[in-house]
Image (cartoon, rainbow over all chains, first blue to last red; front, side, top):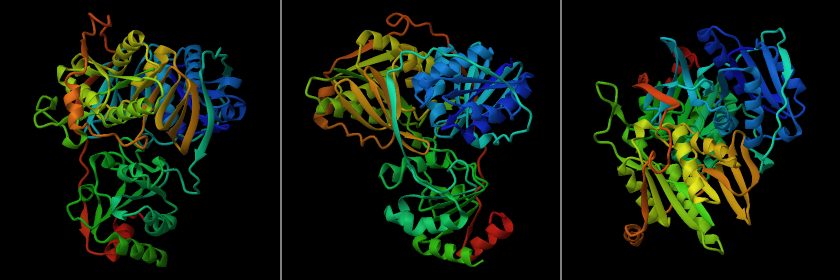
Length: 322
Length: 251
């Protein structure tokens, strides 16, 4: 038994990379509390993923395997995870702030009568109290929160905690049975965004476009060739997602995805505060925009004031020629 | 049928809150408005009401100071039928307390559907709807992109990592809105005039809802994030490539 438990996320038997960020956060928390950590995983036919999770240094991997968990639903998974937390006796519960983590973890907190901090970027301890830093007001301020309940629940932002690597060894495993009941929702299907590109939150290069691209086709014509050169993920502003040009899954910002790649290239993006909140942690930022006053230049390491329809193809062809 | 929607009052995210010398939010010169995701929730409820064969009542709820009456009135001006304000200082709330208050209101109002913003653009916690759904034992569909109601079966397409997921659920249920669900309407002038005469009940959290006001989560302090330094403007693509290769070593 450890005092920290990670709620790991799997889909079709594959561990979500974001859960490895959550494992790192759990290790950071364990260093503060002086304890160890466990991992919980829920689903149906999850032997392989439970085995893989055994290599990350957890004392015990708790598995909740049930036909009712074959597909993720918030109602069923909240019951499974809260049963695992209770079996472990953990007082800290850590999950990744993915779409599943955001959807399910508050329900787990409710079942455990626990307070919860969302999308945590930093964990500290001061005078015996664990403090969780979160970005609030579109990233304009950082609030430090404390949780007053016996069990403390948090989701963590992947960009702030490195992805844990398996370190060998094998955790103990323990099956937990949860009597899943009262579920009134059914998973029907996933219309996946088909892409050979790396995930937006994991890519080392992100190329993003905004209104300055003028029309949706220019994502393919102008932006994609540059993204192809870097094998980059493609990002977009809230405005172009809202306009239906690109999938919501591409949205970078406080209400979309938060990214921190090695290189972020913003084209035709003015730099609304909520977009900046989603990318200002990037290592190097390049902005290409024809408006010299655009706020994006205030966070860009390299700003090029130019017509993107000329500059981006030139950049792409010169990079290819190097 | 009855739909409950939320209409939270938030600091306009474009008005950049700053801190006073003692570390509190300086609320001079700040603009307030309804949380944009709540506007989408109100709009969706109105569309369901307008498309239904039977009468649908839309009740708008806000929890906040008496100033938040404005946001409830805005929801009424958009077309909601009735308003409820739970009067309470924003600083004395956390997500759990808000969910518990909504749970009481749901017990009293017995709506078939609760539609809320996926998050409020001030605290950005993204918790209240999920907490509420669990406390009620109801199914939930967060991050809705499309909502279709047939009888008492709700089909929701949800914005998730990697695409759009479809789920079905039976009512009653909780739905939270994402960006692409709809384009909220503006309140018309006749709508604004009418809203002044629509019923708006003000409730006290302790006397009317009998809620224990202990906080599970407390804000300890606030700070400005480290500002990123603006870099340089480069004159042309060649300089950009040179800087990326030799200075940033990013390519």
